[in-house]
Length: 400
Image 1 (cartoon, one colour):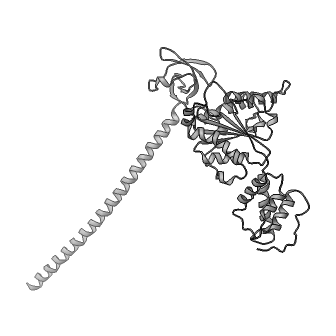
Image 2 (tube, rainbow, N blue to C red; image 1 turned 90 degrees about the vertical axis):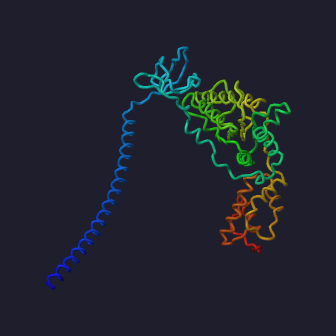
Image 3 (tube, rainbow, N blue to C red; image 1 turned 90 degrees about the horizontal axis):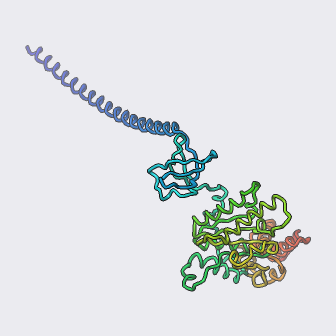
């Protein structure tokens, strides 16, 4: 019958359309499940790694702590006599994984808490204060920024730079390079400034020490600091050790002294031993600076410790003019500034005083709401530095 055939045909079309739709739905569902499976696998992998990390940390936490010790002697059978941090000495075995040639007296090692066997070698102890003394970033001061010290700079370069940068030159000539240089002179004459310039110009490690930092409360602490400073300098060689304010620890030793003075003397004796001991310092230069060379101990000044003493006097007229030019190089000055007049009015002043005068002159210009510095600003700055009444505003016909 025609109607029945058409109905069957429509039914077949509907079934085919339904099957295609259902197939597409299943395909989308399959893709979604595959994506979800990948996400779950990635999450599983992450959790497995995290679990492994936690297990490793747990194993580390479960391990018994190690005991620090120092090797006193190596025996012929391979065992070692050690002094533990807990006090007594032990004869212990050394782990086979450790190279026997490195196991020397004085080496710091770790001991197993149960068997007391040597399990690993430890680095030598270093005081955090010593690490902080090494200047990692070089100063920005260069030799061209130092005025009035031509002779002093030449001597410093000969005695500090050349032995570090060209050691073969001294071997060819057949002489020993100077072992130490002492910078003396009034405050503000450029001793520390020259040391900063040396630190920048040389490629050596620069270790700066303040003399008062070596004066410690407990017996032997100051000497230990000195010893560790020079050990660090040898490790970082070529290096420069700069001891500022040397008179704080290097003054005359007295027969009658308090316990504090005796501790300072112990520190001084350790410093003398490091400056001129049995062991060679290698490529380690020593720079010292002091305002009071008259109170230094004679043993510190003898040749072999500080071979060259460089005096930093007050700058002369030419020196003060150079210093004025250096410090006014970046300043916005009036066209008719006469630096010669400023040189005449600053007789007896140091380089630090001249820098302060330039800074004060700029501050007077800022106070008057100006962007350039006049001769009158310099005059008032000199008057202020000298302590005279002259800091008030003085009318001037000089304008920028």
